[in-house]
Image 1: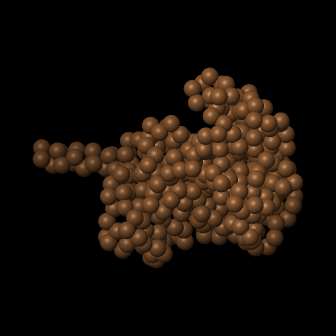
Image 2: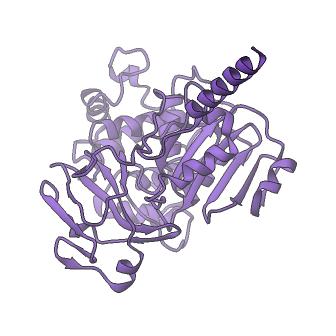
Length: 410
């Protein structure tokens, strides 16, 4: 009887272990519905500036860096708040914060490179360092590509003699061959959207020969897409990850119930507005006209070059051909003046080719749902034309502009 009980126990244990072992043959991981992980703005900035593809989770358990560092082959950076290092068996990176946030990521140069043959090596790295949270009942983790934030899917592991169909309307941001740590991005125009594509194991895409180096390293294919997922002829679900940014930069002075929290998060994520080194956003701080000009130029896609003159001069020069109603084009005193809600309305209206007198500009804001006034009355007086503009307010105004499709100068 004792032998039978022992045998039964071992059988049950073995069955339990089998259930715990993941099936990497499909490598299709499920993510919970929109978990919200707040990370310090400092941590978010590191990923935004350095990361390509990122896999992350938050255990919410304090981390002992002294014990953890022995698991890395190289430590690149360590502060009281985080550690950045290279884990064993990979050339990618791991960022761990003191409060239990883990992110495995490729460099920006490698972009969407993941090990297409073995699933996501980033996910395996994450699993090794945050095991308990990865295997909890919610399976909470996510994928995001900081270099291509509009991408929605990553598909990989096309066997090199397979055909594949890219759905009509899909934008392919990246197309690459991958062999473990080696990665090479190929011209996207080799692919045909809406048609069947042929990837030959002999080293050609749709009949176009690849260079010798690419042919030598070919093992898998990666597509970083938006708008649809390539339908692979052998298994359309193979190595398919949904990309969504579930990370919220946390500021100590922006509570979850702050009226502009989502707007501030959007502005920070997009790089329009930075936080402060002490972890604050300062939502009530007022903006100078030069600050407003820098933010507006970034919003409309201006990429600054080498600085000259006043720190914001090149941003003003960007707007000169459009004759926007800014006062500091050649006047540094005006650059340092506090900007008002009214001037913002005039600049926004003018940027869209509309009349920008005071009453016309406020009317433009109401008509396009960029403002409802301070009480919802939608009168000129209710707009508070001469009131100084705050960092929280400008975050809201520009996000509403994006939602309204006002993303180019007219």
